[in-house]
Image (tube, rainbow, N blue to C red; front, side):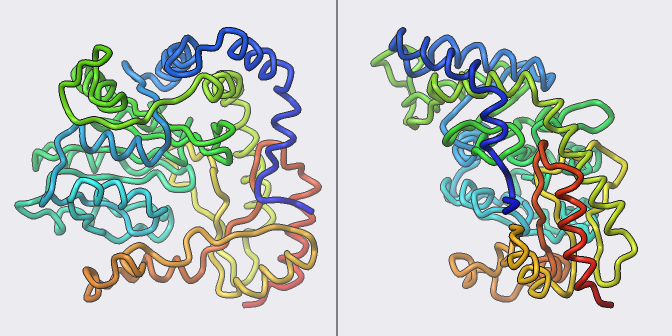
Length: 366
């Protein structure tokens, strides 16, 4: 069986280091916002080229806290992509704001910057681009729009840790960058975890207060905050993996390029496209095909996992359907009908990729 991601292999490689760190945490009995959390925040900020990194309990919380910290409130509009996990839009809704969905680029699956300006209204307060599948959004265009219209920019980097544009990491372009450390992410812990990056000292201080019950000093509460703190156990794991993230992402890119070399030219299949404007880190390897059901059945029969990210764009989800009934976003809808993700992880072997591609080749039709 070839899974979508094999976390057991990665754990075996770092087991001794992780278990030593975990034992130290247990011996010290300091579990929340302790020395490993502080060290991880500093190390992550240094890796990403951010002045500040503030950890929290999940990627969803990272989005929620970042939006709250920049002042998004009820009645505001936030422009974002409909082709993403629902957490992107949930975070907007938590604050009583409205997600405004803009269609995506058919090659990158990211929000199309050329469509954003038409969606800006008097109520627009922010743009929330998603670096989907590990491919960076065209941030220069988005930052130019934000500057022209006086908008905040919150980057959803849940799938893009280590992705870069001209050497500059995602999460360092906007007012804040929001990361998820869900176990299957490029940098993942052993549960939920998240982080927000920013270049603003003021915003960093606000985020630290918001994540900790609105408190800067124990039992003194200046605002209504949240309980969203990374624990020491997850920080130990993330510190071990952060040391290896460049190699992990390199392994993903090698696997992805091997797939693409083998799949290019097959009838009825469009491999994922790298737009050459940034370094894709392939959180997912997602192709387009009109034969999706056939491939999924054949792969399953051969013992190979596959997945659909995402079968229903957000504006067509039941929770949003009434408010977006009259909106048509044809690119997102078309991609959702054709997208298929294949196994991708740093340790995926060339022989496994060839075996997966052989199954696809046997069922490829124009």
